Length: 177
Image (cartoon, rainbow, N blue to C red; front, side, top):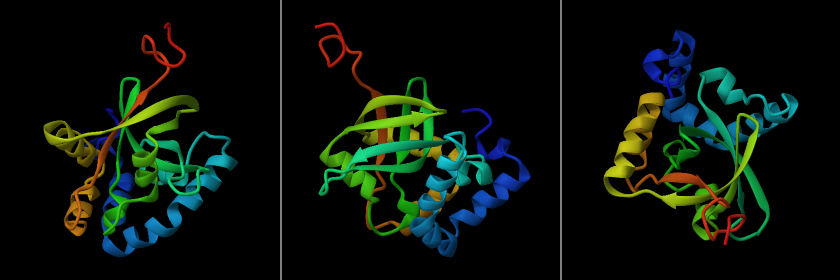
């Protein structure tokens, strides 16, 4: 994740990351940023999102199955790569409630992840204890705003989720059985 760390980011990226942590900008971002990101993602043919270009964040596209609707829902998220796995943090910009994609993963942990144009079927695993804290701290090294989000969302524990590839484990779907 070198290059994504706040300390290594450009001056412009650091300034925009700080701005995004503020209460007003985070409130606005929670309501419209995903829409802008999706448009830029389509127009750029999957090469970037508005958020990635603006902040230097490692943005991934996560497609979940709607918990109530059963429909596919795609959302851009800051993803923390770990080999072939990716960690995402359900901060919802410090809002008092979890983001919809988190509820979708709780209902159906199977999802599709696109990282740098590569599509992977994944399964979500909710992290707990020291593993959760370690990944939250690592995320805060990239986006210090998560510390402020945690304070604003004090009524809930911000979920940290590991997205792991599926279909290659022995006996699993797509694997030798």
